[in-house]
Length: 189
Image (cartoon, rainbow, N blue to C red; front, side, top):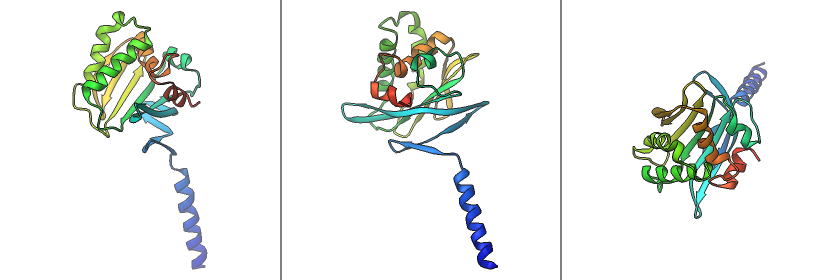
């Protein structure tokens, strides 16, 4: 009887462990497949590693309510979603992050940055603090409030407007992304 009860406890322990929320590991970073953020329940659409000159810089993950493999649909959607950036390199600094974000906006807007220049500057303010390996930036879009950038869970900047969100998400998901293999990974391709 004791062996039966012990076996039963082991079975229930294993069953409850398998019910835990699954995670995906990309570049050494564990990403929850399901994420609750404030009042939103999101699913990991995809994630990948941003690298440059053979160096891994960060892991970018895309969280949405309805997963999609269509970058244009995600960019155009006026619904809550988030891109999370896990900094994995000590080579990333606030200035480098700001410069690469600005370059990404130039790519995503086809070089026409002028209409959103002030908004880009506001977003880049979030990178004014020191950026360290292990930091997490959440770029959260909500239709009523726009894009809020959280640095390690603390809100650092906010820019309203769907058109700004579209340019921001276009950095990674447009037809001219910052890195094609990262775009493909974020679109779960």
